[in-house]
Length: 260
Ligand code: ZN
Image (cartoon, rainbow, N blue to C red; front, side, top):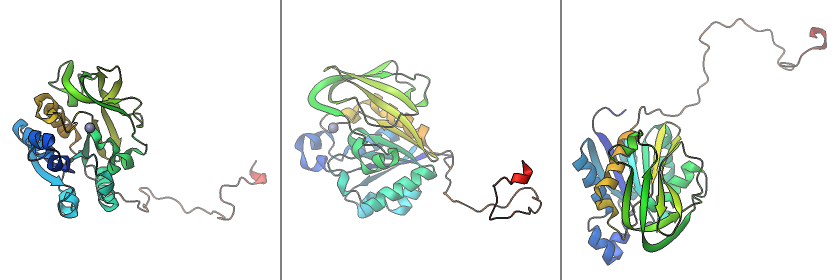
């Protein structure tokens, strides 16, 4: 249960930053480091960095079990994430851990597992303008954001986004090329809150934008667990005394002719 600072683990596959000079220039320590620094600056968080090439892919059991909210950025290495780690994270989300999936994480194993659909979409990379419209100004995730966020250059994601109907769509994006997209969506799975947030293509300085960080910070506070509850399927004793029933188990539930 979350009482003080929200314990956030920022997970990043951390590959583009090592292999692409333009990305390295924007995010020399990785996108996860910039996001974590943004949260620390906002206040109210204890952050931890995790990456695909770390031991146990950055998510050993003690890390997952001591995380209130997991932030996930992945793209080209989705297939390298082990099924064991996906199961571990899924179980913890169902128990109450929050999960924020960013941008190309729409195709991550964990997002697809939790949502149960293809999570496919349209995309285009021509550095067009995006305007994210705030549809839910009273929602905790949009506090301090105003009517919209404008990003001068982004990769386009367009509908149809193959996701189950979200609990809430808090942002819808308009793109210069004409498409629209449900860019901020909330879901609940078990006791866990999930937020999908679209911005974050690696070749643009999206996570250096304080308003994008504000949304992620708001979402991390919103997604912090209300409870952590380990799943069980118990055989349960009655709360009241139930008189012994004289039931012929072979015929239970069958209405006898004589009783009609
Ligand atoms: Zn992208």
